[in-house]
Image (tube, rainbow, N blue to C red; front, side):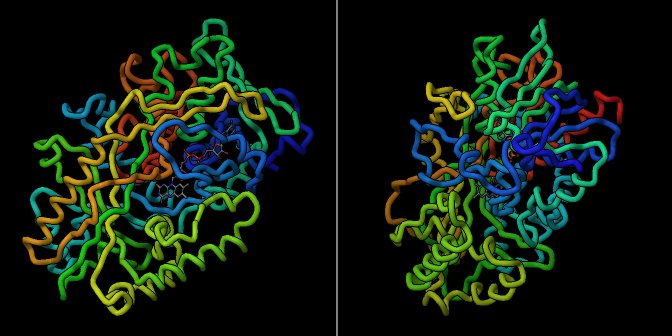
Length: 537
Ligand SMILES: Cc1cc2nc3c(=O)[nH]c(=O)nc-3n(C[C@H](O)[C@H](O)[C@H](O)COP(=O)(O)OP(=O)(O)OC[C@H]3O[C@@H](n4cnc5c(N)ncnc54)[C@H](O)[C@@H]3O)c2cc1C
């Protein structure tokens, strides 16, 4: 028996271990998966259970004072498997340029180069059961591109990128259940909420970590190494709340914890009307035997450098007639009623208004929602969507990189959650830079479409409204320099020798790519680093 429940099982009050991983989402489970066969005592501590429970989910409540985020939207899932219980599986790699110190983007640059993460991307792709890494290279798709797609590919100021899906979104909880259950060395503790981290006397080493269940049971863990893997909003919250020994919280001597918060602001704005014979099937989501690809359009590296731009991209979704969209909306709402009762009815707030349809298209596009085989079946119809819509129209979804901004941040408010931890206040900043970059990319695409006689990009207005994308990035950023980052290039907190952070909170810059593939790659890199400290590699 390797699954324990702090709320229900009778357990010792104190346990010593080699590694204590807190949080069993993508990051925590990816790390734990690397230790199942080593003779190290590893504890994977998880706040929730196997299924969502409203009281546990409420521990995530926060107050937003910054740029509006979606109301009543479940952007994190607090139970075993974490947010990958509800993610959509879209996987992208960061670009090479994301890792360099760009002199036009202040506080940019990672403490290691792109080549160092490539090997881990390879391993992450395997772990997530995605189609082979080569599929992420646009060149791989060149021979399958039609002449219009090739013309866009040749354009000077822009280049193409690839989003890849597996046959279904990888669910960490389900995929690792039997491995963890039969593991001799790894134990999973459910209903175990981290509430306090205590340092030893010299304040450079963690001596114990306190866990509590909602019904008041407690457990003290004394680890040799501790990894916080609780997500990009909760990691900083836990560090800031641990201030019984150091007033400003752990790792926060330079007031960096919680700062530099970024997401990928996105906006559904603009429609592409294709000319009579033009088609862009690879741009709307193309199924192949073990997955799907969708090409997107981003600024080329040279243009980013010469025009001082951020790493934005846009992707395209077929427009279908209102009647189809309305029925689609109704089906989704009906499905939610039946399958996502209870607390999960908060997951998405579909109003009946047709104005919300583009949101639905982004979040629940057929390629992400439908089983792979079914999508492959309906794809030929989508490909020739003219018969549905009466025209060749594609909707433009714009995704932004945000320049690091220390004023965009999370910090502790006065209100407390049921466990006595201060809730966070989110002050997400989105400004003119994001808008400027969206319009610039659209102008390049527009001129490419016209010049090559592919079609035209139409906009009703240049007023852009963004929404968040549930990507919580940057709040415990990575740097060689302890004055500029909370963790070092090994994800270890500067000045604490056994506390590590996993997840997108360590990204110093966010690029435009959905974060989970990079979260997993970095987690595997961290697992190797931990193995080194135990002399295992
Ligand atoms: C609807 C939706 C769709 C998405 N689609 C995509 C996509 O297509 N592609 C993509 O790349 N990303 C996507 N994302 C984002 C992606 O899901 C997250 O970036 C990723 O899951 C984060 O992994 P994580 O392990 O860092 O955090 P999480 O998965 O959030 O895991 C954190 C874990 O820590 C636990 N925990 C929290 N606090 C405590 C505590 N105090 N004590 C103990 N345990 C604790 C939680 O219960 C949870 O299990 C999507 C997100 C949402 C909401």
